[in-house]
Amino acid sequence: MTTAPHILVIDDEPQILRALKAILGEKSFKVTTAVSGHEGLTLAAANPPDIVILDLGLPDMDGFEVCGRLREWTQCPIIVLSVRESERDKVAALDKGADDYLVKPFGIEELLARVRVALRHAGRASGAKATKITAGPIAIDLAWHVVTRHGAEVKLTATEYKLLAYLAANAGRVLTHQAILTHVWDPADADHVEYLRVYMRQLRKKLETDPEQPQFIITEPGVGYRFLAD
Image (tube, helix red, strand yellow):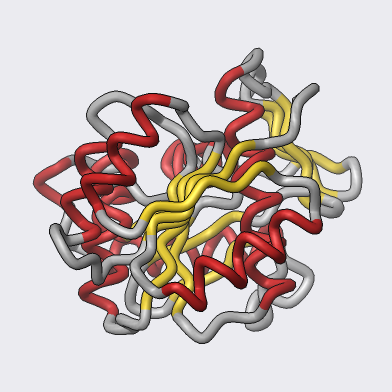
């Protein structure tokens, strides 16, 4: 981006707004703040942001509703920042269209890392669609359906490839079990998490140096998976 990325923070806690404005401002981001869902939606429509950082516990409307309303017209990354740490809330936010979820209190470096990932993902989505994705020694050619590790081709089944391609095309995003199952298998299989676990184990055996300590196909406990690309 040639201009400073614009981040809209929607949160009703003054200390959080002050902290994020200072932290993100130091990193040369343009920061706009809103203290309610309606104000956030109005500001987003008037000056579309590059990223939205959204709290779920807003005074006028639930953050889930804000997320859903934003997704009606924009695909900008949404990072949920909330004290709610239950798996149900995380899954609900991600299913409403959020790209990521951080629990308060959060680490500054972790938040900045998530922002950088979101910006990279947004850049790929708005520009020419990336056809080659790398993650350490792994290279995925989405155009030719070829996967290599350290330069040697990795043989994948059709389902394994479809699963990996979906993860890689959404690198950095947390994808819920339901979203993955619906895309790779069928909406009727959305509750069959055991399918997913079996195929994830197979992919990790073929791609990870240590399948028990994966570096690229990361489990988000109780929620889903995230693929970490370069």
